[in-house]
Amino acid sequence: MKTVCLYFQVHQPFRFRRYRFFDIGNDHYYFDDYTNESILNKIAANCYLPANKLLLKLITQHKGTFKVALSITGVAMEQFKLYAPEVLDSFRALAATGQVEFLAETYAHSLVALKDEDAFRQQVAMHSDMVEEFFGQKPLVFRNTELIYSDHIGDMVARMGFKAMLTEGAKHILGWKSPNFLYCNAINPRLKVLLKNYKLSDDIAFRFGDKGWHEWPLTSTKFARWLNDLDKKEEVVNLFMDYETFGEHQKKESGIFEFLEYLPKEILKHKSLKFGTPSEVASRLQVVAPVNVPNPVSWADEERDLTAWLGNEMQQEAFDKLYAQLPKMNRCADSKLLKDWNYLQCSDHFYYMCTKFFSDGDVHAYFNPYETPYEAFINYMNVLSDFAIRLNAAVPFSSEEKEIANLSGILEERDLKIKKLEEEVQKLRSRKRTTAAKRTVKKEGVVSKTKEKSQKGSAKMKSKK
Figure 1: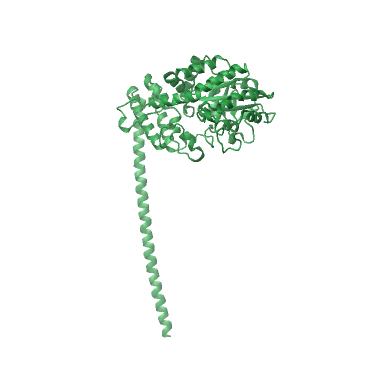
Figure 2: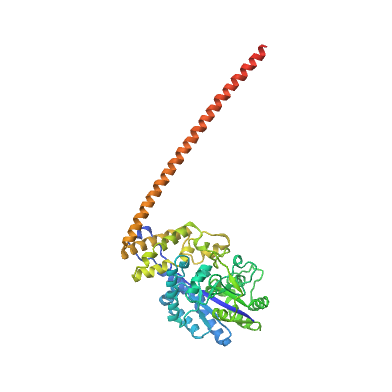
């Protein structure tokens, strides 16, 4: 029997206002409250409230046979409390059914797993505590930001005590293997790994409303048939997508809610199919093999890698400067700075700086408050500069940090001197080559004239003879 595992991601960042260079050091409030509230209420009306209402109806209707999993970021939960408490109540109602599993992730939907294990652990613990407070569940399964995963990240997650983790079933890590089995981490086999079936997931998330798609229109009957027609030996189909697929990415007019409403019924018509949560999949199925992921993968774009967030120099500079503040943040007790620190880490800020185009361009433009990636970079760096000033004032340099800063200054000065000297050496070499070339040309000219005279002299001697 094949298990269908439905998982939805819920996230909205705190977006920054236009923060000018002249605001640095003068104005310490970074957020566009109007935009944040407007966008959240719009998505709540289009997606969260109607989708939650429908899920509650389906769970009640199917009496324990229909199950889903959700992960809601800490910053999204904060916005629900601020702007739309009725949304939080509707998620609580789903939790009360016992048919919805809530997963852990990083509190700020951040990329911290790529940078520092201790900070990663802190964010995950902070998020797990919030999930337990709001929904009464202690998460057992982990879902990293944007499904980012590697062998190393999986090992860290296993050591935190999670029994399973979700990630992308990317072709370049699976090769000929199918994502429709349960795998384990290559370093720490105790961690089970559920791989997204990106083909079937994206049929719903991205292609559902595309009238140019050769399978349009996609009906729940057709989709259930596709699931049933998969190889009988395969054991699980992981359908992972943004919750905003329902009503926001795919508009209500596309028929997406009708698709979701009839999907459980059509799937359960097939005796070979049933629904299960990630925890149930990890407990019931046997691991078939370790999945080797030496370099991080994600569910973003065609490459399924990190280039959506760290693919250009702007993103890398912003990322490095942000986490250069980490040693001081570890000694910071200021609640306002800690809150801003979380919001600064949201991966969305780096996503807005992406310079990708072509097939992924529309995705990167979605809910992007900036006209260009360069504008996003400048705005973020201005905010980060002011944050660093506040942090330096709140957490003075220790004697060790002062020494490091002095040594760094000396090294930087030395590097500049070396660079200048190298440039002077290059200039001197260039001049030497130019002078040598001129001498060669001049010498060749003299030799040429001497040959010419010699030839003329020989010609005259012959004519006399």
